[in-house]
Each structure stands twice: as structure tokens, then as C-alpha cells.
Image 1: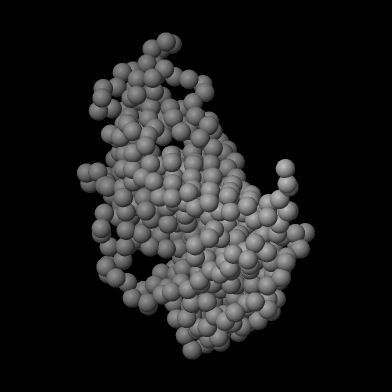
Image 2: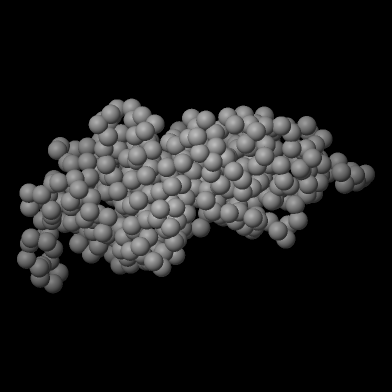
Length: 476
């Protein structure tokens, strides 16, 4: 039997992998949450296999794989070269944040206790939550402070400063406030960004062992942020994501200059495009340059970073990123870190989505909604990365007792987080594990409210005798 030439075998392998990737992408659009999660995980694995095949770049050239880049400036054919693998960071893999006993939150109970006492002032409740968030972030070497807007039940937008560690592990809010205008102006957006950066600088002084970084989408004038940063002695680094809504996005000359030098290399990242599903792994080619730009009539020295997705499946359109930061990126490692900060904004998008699809119950104040959203984001993030993680790490002893009583299950020393989340969803009215994720989020929030009520009842009851537990009715 004739053995096919090596080049033909390689071409056949590429065709098979490309076909599998296309089929997997179709499955990723499924309405079933489990199917989407498995499809995204398979897509990431197939993409890595495709990169490892011999003659990858030759195959791409032979296939005529040319990605159409929106707003791309000029050709980069002269800058393309094979990157030395020794200078490329290891492929990014989704890593579960380490769950510690401090991960359990008592913020909801504390806010409910304050409300019961008759105090419901927004600033007071926010300060109560902020103090606990500050305590949690002190346990981490680096924390990202994500600034953005989110809406609750179609009301006026809420500006929030949301903190995450290890890329996506939520720690809570440092600040949140409402805007009287349904559509804030550019001046309002600038004032909001300055307020958030001031808060980050104040927290940096109170947590000297933790490195804080401010990340936001550029929907405001950059010059005031730079002046504010310099006024605080650059207490925290900052990074802005230049989107289509910013005039700097369309400045083709600016980004041509940023790409004038040779590329720094290629690096892999975990992209959380769809929460409730495993992140997919992408590879991006990066350029970075320290240069002078014009913003708001002022000249500013910033680092301009340009990234473009590579190793795409046939027919895909490449994603590109345009970033501005005070932090230098002289090598691939520095550019890789800034890109990771940018992609962490997906954590804020998840939080904003929770706020949009989680309905208020009764007259619950919005501060409670925000804190409940933070906790749901925390629980779902950890459950996604490690479903079998011990639930006792995330729930207090009283909460575990209340869940056991409300769900009529036997107490167990071994209970995983995914099972506890499912029980909360059942308490909120959704028993189907494959239900729409927005419905699951709303159900988990209702379950948290019932859980909080049940914990309050348990704490007012006398301690049970050995072998006896109080009985809670179906309403908790």
C-alpha cells in the first residue's frame, strides 16, 4: 500500500481538524447550557491541537486564510515572522481560583441586619460592603478594579467599581452610585471614571501589600484620568479599552505608529465570552509602543497596545484590541499582562448581566441587589471552574444548616458547590439544571433571599439539642 507523502498527510489532518472545529462552533450556539459548555471546551482543545500540527503557517497560506479585520490599518505582511517558542508564554489554561475560608461572605446578612434596624441609607450600606471588600482584597497580591455601568430592572444606570482577583474571582464592590440621567453625557462618564479612580487610590493606601489596577472602557476624556493619576502619584496603574465609541479608535495613524515596530510575539489567553460555559483559548499577536497621543486637546505619553487574534478557524473573523495604559510593555510578558487585564472586563459584563436579568423582590433596596449580584457571580464563577469544590468554603455553618432544612436533605460533611447552587435554584423556583441561565440566576437570587430569611430565623432560635433540628416550613 502506497504511503501518502508527508505534506499530503499534514493537509488531511488540518482539513479534519478544521471540519471538527466548524461542527463544534455550531454546537456552541445551542440553547442547552451543558452543550454550550462542552462545545466551548472542545473548541479550545481542538484549537490547541490545530496549532501543534506541522506546517501550520504553510497550511494557512495555502488555504488563503485571510481574516477581515474591522478598522484594520495597513498591511502587516512585513512584520510577520515565526515567533521563537522560548519567548512565548505558556498556553493559557482556565485555572480555578484557590478557595480559602475567607471566601465565604456575610455581606448579605449584615445588610439585612442593618435594614431590619431601620437604617437603609445607600451610602451607609455601601460603606458596610466596602469594608468587607477591602478585607477580602488584602489577601491577594493583585486586584483589578473594573469600572462600568449596569442596569437593574430597566431603571437608570448604576455606575459600579467591581473588584476581581486571579482574573475573574469576584471580591465585591468598592463603590456604586446611581445616575439621575437615563443616558449620561460624556462629561458624566468622565466624572464617573475620576470618582472611581479616586476610590481605587484611597483603597491602595489602605492595602499597601496589594497591587491595585484600574480598568475601564474608554467612554470618557482620557486627559482628566491621566491628571488624576499623576495627582495621586500613580497610586494604581490604569488601563483603558479603546472601543468603537471612542474617537481614538478611528485614529488610523495612531495605531499604524503603534505597529511600526516589529511585533512582540504571540500569546494565549482564556476568553470568557459566555458565562455559564467554559472559557475558550485564543491566541493573539501583540504590538506595544510608548508614544505621545492627543486627547482632549492635550498631549499625553501612554503605552499603546494593539492585539489581533490569530490561528482562526476557516471563515472566522479575527478580533482586535486597542488598549492605552500608563504601564509600559517593553516585552511580550508585559503586553501579555495588559491583555489579561483587558479580557478581565468580561467579569464585569457577567456582573452587569446578572443585574439586568435578576428581578427585585418586594421592596428590596438596590444595594442589596448589587451585593446579591456580586455573590451570585462569585458562586457561579467558582462552580464553573471547579464544580466539586467544597461548599462549606462558600457558605457559613448557619447557611448550610438552613439549606439542609429548606431542601429537606440530610446534613453532610461533603457537599460540593454545584449541588448547593442547584438547591438554591430549586428554592427560587427552577429545578431544571439545563434551564436558561438567566432564569437560573434569577432563581438563585430568590433562593439567596429565602436562605437569608431562614438564617435570620435560625439565629433567633435556641440552640438545638443533640440529634434535633428546628423545622422550617416551605416558606422558610
